[in-house]
Length: 222
Image 1 (cartoon, one colour):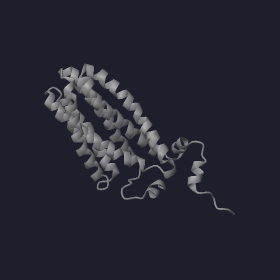
Image 2 (cartoon, rainbow, N blue to C red):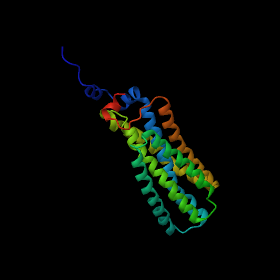
Image 3 (cartoon, rainbow, N blue to C red):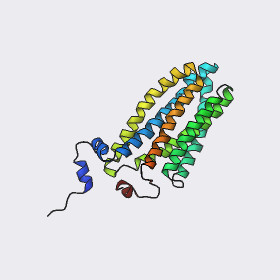
Image 4 (cartoon, rainbow, N blue to C red):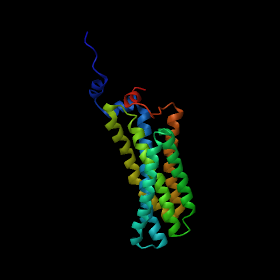
């Protein structure tokens, strides 16, 4: 009797990789979609906040915008390096959850200093961007390695597609809410990041795997 075909061949013969993910790995797909939606909504909303809300409200010249972005990029460098160093030390779940929660709290603190002038806004933006960048740098490898090899590209693509929905909507929401209240716009962005923290918490509470130190094949078979 011939041996059954390898699992990867059976997966490839399925009509749709996305349907396979929905049927076999719904929790992993939901986690990837939630993390990317939260990240993209919060991150793109944060960068839309400056030109759409801050410049008009403070009557700052557009020439000052690159200075804000430079400060944010310096913060992002620190956040990215920090997240990369913690993923294999603390583990994926702790790093992702910690960064997402810290970003949410950072945005709440940022909202509290919006009336203190351009200097406070620049510093707040740099600190929040540090945390936000650390969040997405931690999130991408975390949900990417959860999908089996034959479905990894589909899983990542579906997760990122969910994020693009948030990325498209968030700037409009920031503009609308920010026109009424600058702090309220930041609190709204904090809510997006909190969603990601809740998603990774639910994943762990429901027995989701912690991938630190595991081979990709071992993760896929759990």
